[in-house]
Length: 398
Image 1 (tube, rainbow, N blue to C red):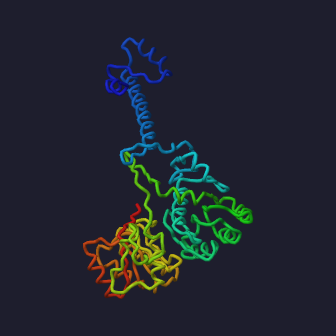
Image 2 (tube, rainbow, N blue to C red; image 1 turned 180 degrees about the vertical axis):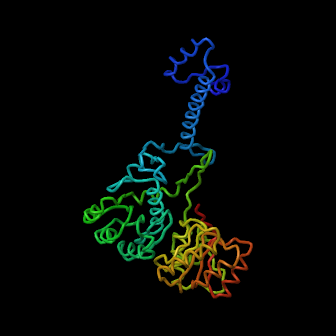
Image 3 (cartoon, rainbow, N blue to C red; image 1 turned 120 degrees about the horizontal axis):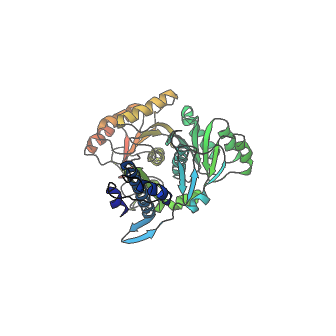
């Protein structure tokens, strides 16, 4: 009824706020009655009020899941935290989360968080969660500039940082082990914006505290890993909201190659499509590359060793361009890609991307497959002596 009254504002006074009553009485006392400008002002207030009500309904509906014909209520986003700013200083932003999530995430020190800080922290945690061995990642603008595993978390961090030390300056660090004293000293030796880890050893706290502006966060990684199976990802678009199941790299949870006779849904599609089989070392590197590549913005092509990234080509309009960016990054760091492996988040539509990878020095490549020109790309890999693995599963990230 409020909307109907607002639509007919020329003939109807629609009043939604008691504070407007005195003005309404004044306007009614005018010889010519309420002015058109006043009627228009009331109309706008009415539509703002109904819009707020509709938003409340939408927010409530967004906490409800529909699965197999049943409805269930998710945890409401009750906690609000004002952020330093949004993507840019002129944008305001807040952090909404459930009560449970607020209890899991702890902010120990540093400047106020911004919107982009949290996006980068999220990206760092997602990659760190892919690994059970000690692993570290350095994030810049939601893309990994370096990811590595190591014999210790300090070893993993140094490898990740040195994968691209230029980009690591001012980066966001994700660790899948508590920050110990050695790791804290390594982190404090350069400029890092924020760190996310499952914990902080007491000996590390004083070292990190000396970097007063650096944000240090902890979260329950076990809880985050358990929640992945039912987690959803959402984002707004103009005039609406999108939601999807969280992408999970389940096909790489266990070592590659899959054991003979393993017919699980996650690994059944993994197959070698070239004449040459990957060596054991290449299998290890391909699995590492695949777990990282899934978290790089599309189009993505990355080059790795068995335990660290060597070059990352992220967010390009073509796969050839993605390879060129990665090769340029490697050259700038005097990193050789000879003997590396490569991963592409989606199939190669033409052989040019595969040829560019071979020219860069990679000896094996992993990709989803599924192009109408797969045979052309496979033939190119055979021609260049590369081993190539299809996973049957794409990992776009927009």
